[in-house]
Image (cartoon, helix red, strand yellow):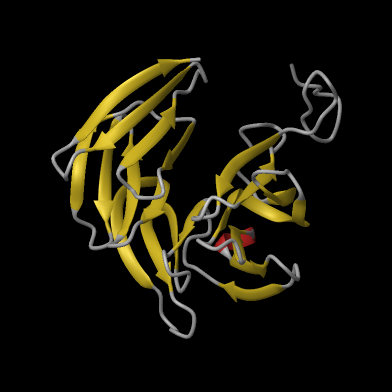
Length: 227
């Protein structure tokens, strides 16, 4: 139960709610962004971002900034990035808390992003496109998609994205090639596993978790779990 008479959503024990939880590639750190209020709010707004040691819960980074969607860590947990206002991507040094880079994109409504495996690039997804930003390179790479990018992953070989339009979904790679296509109701939350071989979605009623296993590029095998 949420307390709706306050500025931010809280649970029945008066604790702030967080969403968009993720891990660094090595699993050592986790990041979380305070849930928006209302929960379906799609605009950039000031939200608390927290990074903590996964095993102990020790907080190593805290900031408040305008955020759209979630925040992501690179493989080692040394850098954190999120999308701010007008599709701007901000990159932080986790140890010092300083902003070390800002990247402007052509995706003003972007919400989804991911670091490259080596931490030397960031992919950002929105409706109609995925952009790949490389520090020191003036122009970003543009990958055209038909639909809205819901989730991104950067495995060792390529960036992958889940793209949905109505009840149709595709998984595309960095060249825009379709790796899988099928039916999928619009997920309320979704994420790839770090190796990009599986995708986990939560249905709109928040009552069912579905794992989709990418089988060697031949399709997605679907496994349900009710919650």
